[in-house]
Amino acid sequence: MLLSYNMRLLPPETAEKVSAFLKVQEEFRRWAEEWLRGEAEKPERNPLKYFTDEFLHAGKALDWLHNVKNDAKPKRLRPPLVFNAQLRLDKERDVGRGVFVDIPKREVRIRKWSGERGKTIVLPLRDKAVEWILARVEEGGRLVLAAVWVGASRRSRAVRLYVALAFRREVAPMQPRRLLVVDFNALSNGVSWAVVEGERILKRGVLRPDVSKLIHLQKRIAELDTLCANKGKACEEATAAKSRLWRILRSFEVEVVKKLIQLALQYKAAIVADVPNDESIRELKENNYSAEKKVFLNFGRMRKRLKRLAEWYGVPYREERLYSTICPHCGAKMEEQPSRRVKCKVCSFETHRDEVPFYWAQKRFHELTSPFSKQIIKFCCLKNLMEIAAAPAGRGPSARRRLGRQARSGLAPGEAGRVAATPPRPARPRRTAQPGLQPPETAGS
Image (cartoon, rainbow, N blue to C red; front, side, top):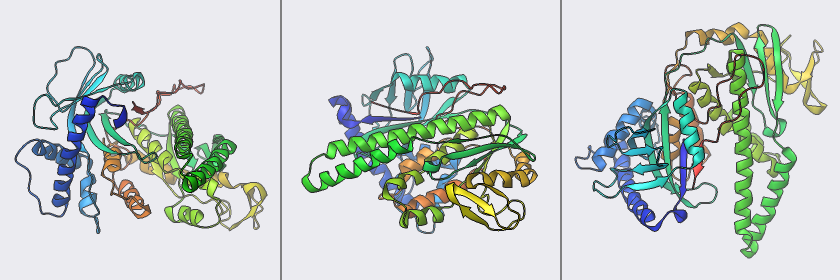
């Protein structure tokens, strides 16, 4: 869970402590950069000694520092401050850990960052955050780590204080009997899915956002950006419109992932995601793809969310490139038809382009299901949140691709213990309507 606090809305006393916290953060990051170059030794005095111990412990547990140190051209390392953490649900004794989440008092306390007494940063917990935490505890999760950092928001550039809470639980891997094939396309075409069992397709569907609404909002943002650049006006309105756009997209991503996880649990299916490679997406963005539709190509967050949620529930997950323009019957190249349909000139097979991967999954069913029988569930609890905070400054396409390669080469789906990133309620084992939706993972003040 990621808690976000706008610095301008914090009480003056708290904001002053956060400013001092920022100095400690920058000092620790300077040490981390020297350590990355092999020029720094472990600090001997607190608070840097405490943060170094927790940082190295988390890095060893998550195995993400190995990727950073072995990068051919490592850039600026910007890690968060990692704390040990404790969760109080009722009247448990405070054992003095760095981050203390007090559910009865609805607050988060950040300690040990200054090396002095009386410097505790106290932050409120909203009701949705409390509800999310209690839901994870009911599922058997426990708070194991916390990461705190100060940084600028990517959308509004406002300075915010972030608190990432990492939960972990033991989960038995599900033994899949079917495949849930998910075809990621531009969101304007929707996310196609199908449940495959052997040579049968049991169920299929398409999940789409409100495309016309998003395109209209994109055009409005372009108009406001022009007014903001030319006359210095409408900047706040443009920022608000962009924030609304990303909230709509994020809500759609959350709903899609929850639906897919519920289907996987209901049908006892392993998830096979057909994701376009980075090069094809980049070519689309750089060529004749209209500007207002480029936002529909940003489905990377949805893919990461699906992978994390599958890990939390023990659902086997893998990414496999399945053909969409090669005939699954004869292997010939298929021709594009109107309305995104494709047709094979050799055997006359015809279908919708987004459904071709489903037929390939039928053909390769035993090949795609066999690796899952040998997997055990293994999880890195704070990996994605650590990558967000530790991303290089001025994060560009090359940095994003590097982080993507690290994530893909990191931990396989499967082995014991996972961190939640907005999981839904467990699906019931019958083919009826699934439980209601969970609150979002981010709560801010």
